[in-house]
Structures are given as structure tokens and as C-alpha cells.
Image 1 (cartoon, one colour):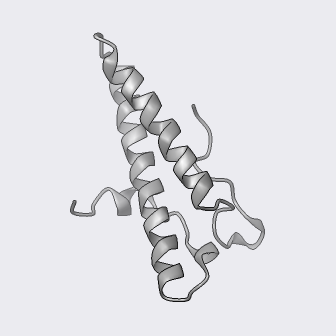
Image 2: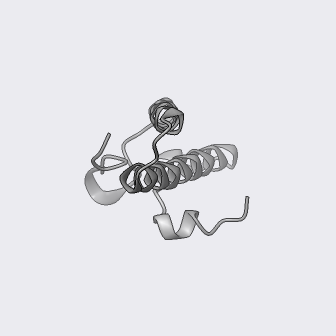
Length: 93
């Protein structure tokens, strides 16, 4: 599965996805990752794809947490935005 992780919204606000869409995307990415990991042969291409999947998953989880935090504090969850891969990859787990 390639292409943009999220679709843009007019005016640059949010990402045009609700929590159901984000969770669906997470499940899709996890399924693909599991299929790749089950394969006994891990080529450079496979490893690169798994790295990309992990980064995409980190961005999805970050966006989901942002939306939930905004809702918790009576802010508009649609104002949550996808953070750059370089930002979410540096978070401590």
C-alpha cells in the first residue's frame, strides 16, 4: 500500500480522517507488517518497507492521541495534524 498516509483537507486543517478512519488505517498497516514479517526472506526492499510501515504507524498513533487529547480538553479534534516522521520517530516509548 503506497501513497499519502492521509488525505489533505481544504485549508490545511486536520487531515480529513476521523478516529474510525485512523484506526482502520492502523489495522491495515499492522496487517501488512505482519505479512512481511511472516516471510522467511527479508530483502533490503522488505526491510525498507517494514521501516516505512513502522514510521507510518507511529504517525497514525500520534494523530489518534492528538485527536483524543483535543476532545478531552474540549478542543476541536479536526485541528489535529500529522506530525513529520522525524518528529514522531524521536518520541520516547
